[in-house]
Length: 400
Image (cartoon, rainbow, N blue to C red; front, top):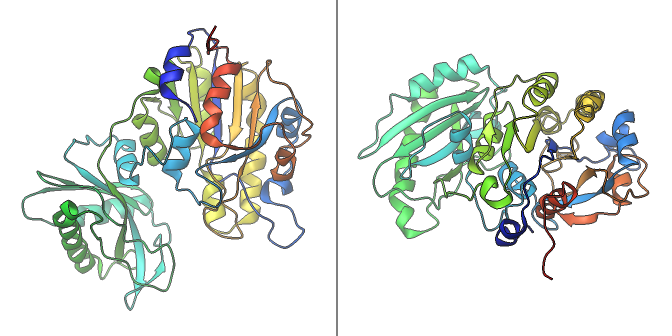
């Protein structure tokens, strides 16, 4: 784990560049026993060639056997202990769309979903168009609650943000998404006594939302996740002395980047556009977080072949990143999303770190099996940033 006081003590300023390419949901599983994972099935000559000249291993986002959410998994990659710095997804989503989140606010990430006879049949309402999302959010803005302001903001497809603002609101709340089909949405419950009133307010909002959306199938109900306040985190500039930038198109990942003090750069959704944004701003920052979302979406949809295709597309653009000559290039994922499971999983994530100062190991391919033979071994994801800082010659010697 990155010891923040130690990082602050040892950090050295120089002109080196660190690029962290995060392929969301990178890790996978075979669809049948003995078969390849998505990454093993993909044709990735550039990643394989790079792996042969790099340090490789399998990173563990949270802990053995623990399936991570996207927020804590990304915090771990940035060196923040996700068990210490617990961040609600609502906060990240709100910050990601540029919402002016106040200290007293409690934010929730909302999903439009489909229910039939009170049971969830589609947790994402068929990934409705964003235009439909905007229309529905406008309807939900009519909901009023006693003693608080209510904000409903569209995000993308089935996702929206719900924020309650007022005195005496507290975090410490359960989610309403049961994470499975064929069961009803859950009520919001208080995990601490002081959050009881806040839970009641969210439940009142959900009751009114259900009535408003009743005739809007497939988006005829909502679930709420990550109900929380902004905890305030030390910035990457404070911890590592890095001018850090994020290149991500999806709001949640832009939000987690803002939480750790990154500048969020404008970019398009296509990976080519993200690489072009990296090139355009390469002289302006020391650290770049570049996020690729679509592999995770394909895994959640159970689409093995689409995930393979996305990984192959990423491989095609790796040379464009290498052409910029970053002193350190990390390629990894925040977590595994096997198409077999159609969800995040607990499996360690293939990870590659390339620099001219690393001792290349015996890995000859960037894959789950290949990285299992790497010199990094199976390691906590929170250890990645100190290793990157060392390879960027940004850490002084400790002690005499």
